[in-house]
Length: 534
Image (cartoon, rainbow, N blue to C red; front, side):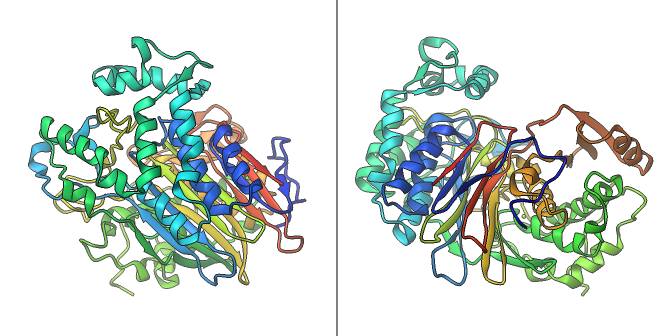
């Protein structure tokens, strides 16, 4: 667990080391804004909210004001972290019969109640030192004056242009003068700037009970949707305890339902019974076992996980060591399973952005924010500049599913964050955008550090595998030896090779060295994230 450990999988990029404070985000402008807050005396929670608001303006395809948030917060001196769940429900009056056989990908009817604004306010009120107005200042400026379009955002706008062009306010926001913005061009969003000013002046009520709420309800009525003023006015995020397990003596803390963060903890529970540290990183036997642990956990998600306000989920049992042993017995060390059956708990949860910050006092937060798919619903609420999520797509229409779509229910979320502690010392905090690949990536990064003694940046740099739920294929970065793909295929896996540093997921986070107190930051070479500290 030391920063000096070497590995041949490192890219040559070292972690960033600071003695006082550190922030890591998915965009340089957001990191810079958060660093200014930290240098100005703000704490980690202030910095993350400021950075989250900036990235909602400058990188709208991954997240926006109309998105959702999950976070784990550990205030300095607190014994236990706090989990924030700012996922919104479907409109209460929703009639799922209007969807027919499929939930729409785009439009106002693809969206759940946005939770991000309430999360920002909650973090500042509970743990921050800045006012919401001060935290949102840089975001207001970027929306009003314009932010330079980076290459990734330009590509994303080009890919989404057909959907954006069909929706007037969306085209106005992201296709100025009907043209694709060039990299480097300033993208101004004056309607979004006004909405952010309203939130800065009146708090979350300025969003959920003000002009935005009126505009969303009007738009929903025009489109045959079900949003009401009550859906928005009564929304609040959930503040609760994180999930917990232990992996080889390290305390693992994860996001509760409706986040699928429990899958990270269950994967590690199942993996703990295999001697992974005895296998060299990149060994096909190691990859096979980890892929099979992932399959077992995801089978349990489909069978048991849903909104705990609506269905009974046996979470304590799902995260027990006894259940992990039961699931481990279903894994053949020599052969891939095709469609693993879920365990029985009675017998014995991609286009996203992640942020982390630690300050000089020891406050720590890991935070993830998303509109779900790239550009979410592709629907900007007219007159507000707010792009809505398409989180309704996270529901199932299968009547037997615990994740069944229903009015007032919250869909399962791929969003999750994690913390790792050892003997009460916080060691790691992080997250990874990437849809269904998030918990797979987090499990690999944690295992790289704990099982293979990689330094923090190397653990994130290392080549990854991804198991695709729908097809059963294993995606393998071709930085692994080619013999690895052959051996996995011999064991029954269907392998698809991808280019180095393929962007199915993008990890980032901060490590704390208990011996020196140093803050050690790392961000994925697979994206344009940036980590800075002092």
